[in-house]
Image 1 (cartoon, rainbow, N blue to C red):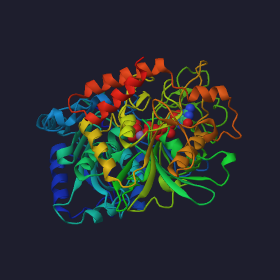
Image 2 (cartoon, protein in one colour):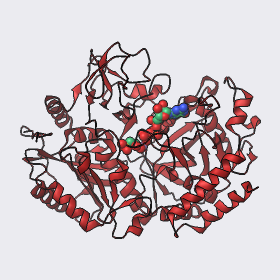
Image 3 (cartoon, protein in one colour):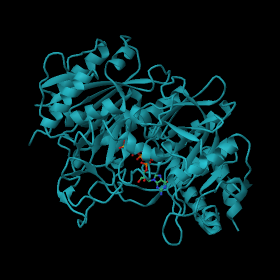
Length: 602
Ligand code: GTP
Ligand code: SPV
Ligand code: MN
């Protein structure tokens, strides 16, 4: 078999910054004995190291350098076509009992799974370099910040981790020499990138992750979904905080009043776009800033408010559909220093994707490496192609993104991709009802995970693929947080994706979502009113600013309509979902369900 990742030999002064923490050294030796790499590369995150690794990655064809004029400092990586998204069916939570993982997770017995993985990893890095990547998740001076080490045989992973996390000596320093300190052990090997030998395994009790057989995104950047969400949610429950699949944005009025909002939408349902929103002209003087675009870690502050930090240091964003029209701030962010995965390459070394501004190129190389023309049947860029870019490139990065104590959250928004049933926005009656709205969230599946696209499934709080323990316990944890907050955020539910009879989205979305955000803020400030419906509070026409927007009253009525026939089905589907969660479901949520069901039982 070809060696997918031949060893590299760094010159002196590169790859040799071995930490002194004994437990780290012991663990690395143990993994090296098992995987038998040709050499070990200790990453320090320096510029010098980065430059050298980029050279090697190009030499090996792992990345292609893009046209320096058009895309300074940017590169393209193509993953194996069998390996282009998260694999939920091969993602395992390995807790001592199945009960702890709960019915929404794929569970496996830890000892057996370790044995199986060790079998797969035996000799897996022969002829390869084993990289040791130290990183932290969270701002350097936050009490929530966690240290992780990822061992990998993929240069692409190293290059990506340097963008997505605070990587290198900063983590080694933070860990110090205390052998008792908490840190995450992550082991990744490409093996032979074979779907039959692909497993993403989490051992929450051991704060450990082992990922084999993939080279793509969330499967292998172990900091992200694996640590910050799956292991993170497990630690959060134990330690009394929240690890959520949420963007965090700041929004400032022309008068200088500022709020922060956190929002959970499932994968490829608009978090990055919402986090970088540019208000339409009518909202002159309003500013939206980004704290995070995918993950929020939140804790209760001394003043009884909820405070959020973004554990990440970069964005791993969906490329297709990104344009100066839909998301100018994302476009500006990726003008330089970007590592693309699975987009198309033009003959002049530029990148292209479906939905980019301007006409398609007459000819280019598609994400698989084949010649593509506008006549081709296949997409030039994979629907789940991604950019990885440092968050400092974002022109609207929030000033408090590095603040260790986090930013105070005024509102939490849940939302899914629903072509019917769900109104544009509603406010939950109270915390418990808000938890219910999050717990019963559903969304059409997207290309972010392998499998069918466009099927409605329950995705509670956008955490279905990311909650590292029993979902009922997770709901209980949420229910318990509320009363501990003297000043809890208000909770809302949105749906940008409702369709009209013509099958088109009724709401223009993107920047126009500012109008929804504005109503949310008005509610937080106790200003504007709303009307109570069966499912929550919705804005009355006079509460909702539509100035300078070309939309009919009829469409607005449709967007906010609560249709009893649709809701009867919805209530039924929610009830089916709760049944699958078993006996442990918090009574409060079942009570919420019964209350809602009664309103539609006619
Ligand atoms: P992950 O990175 O997978 O977690 O995705 P995400 O939630 O950050 O989604 P993202 O912002 O990347 O958007 C995903 C897709 O939804 C893109 O194709 C966007 O163009 C599209 N999208 C985002 N916001 C809107 C919106 O308001 N309306 C419509 N119609 N589409 C949107
Ligand atoms: C998601 O699917 O929610 C992502 C992309 O953010 S990945 O990191 O691949 O999970
Ligand atoms: Mn995501």
